[in-house]
Structure formats: structure tokens, C-alpha cells
Image (tube, rainbow, N blue to C red; front, side):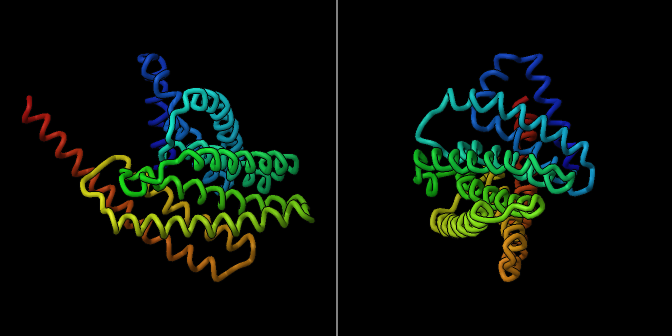
Length: 277
């Protein structure tokens, strides 16, 4: 299903590129465009876990190419203050790390480990730059994408966990290995704190009504669960893994709610169009 949705989105991307170049150019310099990189790395990581390494390598190459094309455009049209979607600069970059580190272990390819380590640092820098300009009023008024503030930390923690495994496989030791282990624990702790803060904000200032940006809430919740499990395994903290397993269920519940809400919204929109016609 994931591959089918990805293929459909690629089709839409190509249709706009050919048939509506002006719209494609307008959207290509927005942070939301980087979802193309994130989606490709997620799919690539999944197929790597299935052992389809050739497809995973192609996904990494494609994601890296799209990242290299889109990042300058997004940075060149930077606007402030930043909102949740701007954290996609970090998410897309760390997505490359997750896929790259997975392939460094699976293939194995030792030279890939230092490359993804450098990319990991770049992703952290991107997060800090966006955070420095982030409007925390979004915690009160955001329509759902403000959760990507935590999502950036979640995928950074996941990337650190994957990088630890890649370092172990490559025989790394000493301070670089220790630094990444500490970074993984610290970033995950910050992510869990941010997750809790966002839940409290949702209870304090509930958002009523459907907004498509609410789908951006599901990603950080699921990514936090995955990151917690991965970091727990990487640093040898089984008690932390239990927390990750528990966090899967809120993410599943939110996805189900969003699926139902999205379907009802589409039906309502279709009925309104029919009535207007």
C-alpha cells in the first residue's frame, strides 16, 4: 500500500511538472515539498528491512538527489517566523540518515557510515536553525503541523539509533561512538518531553473541526514510538523499549480517527459540490 501511495504521489508530481510548471515551481520552494524526500526515505528504509537492497539503494539515490535540488530552493525562499512545516528541513535530512545507516549495515558498506554521520550533524543544525525562529504560539494556535517540532526530534533520535548500529557494524569505538550514544539518549528525552508538552497543549487548547494539517500530528506520534524502540535497542535499555511499545497505540488511534475524519470531510465536500451544481 505504501509503495502504491508513493507511486501515485510521484505521478501527481510529474503531471504538475509537465502540465502546470508555474504551480510546480511555486510549491517546490516551500518546506512542504521536502515531504517527497521524507516519504522516499521511509519507503526505502522499509524495503531495506525486507531485504530488497537494490530498491533501497535506488530510493536513497533518488531521495538524496531531490534533497539536493529542493533544499537550496526552500532555504532561498525562507520566511519567518517558522511554523511546524519548516522542521521538514530536519526531517528530510535525517530521513537520509535513517536509510543510509540501514544500508550501511545491510550491504554492508563501511564508507557510508561517516557520510551519514556528517549528514546527521547537518540535520541537527537544520533543527536548531528552525527552532531559533519558531513561533511557539503555534502550540496554542497550530492546526496540526506544529507537532513536527517534536517530529524533527523523533526522527533525529531514530537516526542516532540507526547510526549507533552502523558504527557498531563498522567497528567504530572511542569518543565518536560515545557521543552518538549520549546524543541519542538526550534527543529522545527532549522528544518525549516535547510530546508530553504538545499533548498538554492539545488538552488546554483543543482544536475542533477537521484540518488536513492534522495528519502532520500522526507522523511525530508514530515516529516517537519507533525512535524510542530503536534507541532502546541501540543503547541497551529494555525498559525504554516498553515505553515505545505503549506509544504505538496513541499513534494508531490518531491515524484511525484521521482516516474517519478525512472520509467524512470528503463526503461532505462532495455533497456540497453536488448541491451547488
